[in-house]
Amino acid sequence: MLASVELGEVLRERRKAAGRTIASVAMDAGLSVPYIANLENGRGNPTVSALDRLATALGAQLEVSISDEPPPPPPSVGADLLAASPRGEQVVATLAAAQSRSRAAVRAQLTETLDSLAAVLGRPPAIADLDRLLDLLLLADSGSSGGVRAP
Image 1: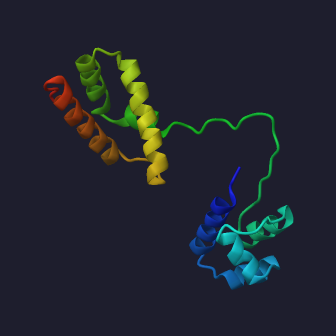
Image 2 (image 1 turned 180 degrees about the vertical axis):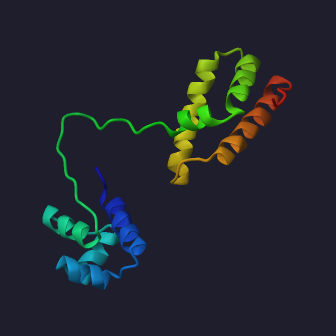
């Protein structure tokens, strides 16, 4: 569930991405400029009807659901990126050996780290981001285990 501040950020980002002013969106949605400005600033308690009109004015669709089921977990970008990296499995093997851990455990933690990185970056990490992370892990591990060498 979105908090009002997050909703405001989503509305503002959509509006700006469309190159629209608050006034033009307000006109299309049949809402007042101050009302939309307050929503974008995390204030107010919009009705579903107002949100639907805003979504339509912004070229989007409002989706509302009430469910006892938890939402499905987002797909893992880290697993796909790690599998696509020619260097990833080599570093997993190196770290696993240096730390006396299984490759599966190291791979799982690296995947989780990459997924968290996607949330921080606001985009899926790229191979270059993975390579930097692998370099950092090898460098950090070499300081604590007495010298892991990069593959």
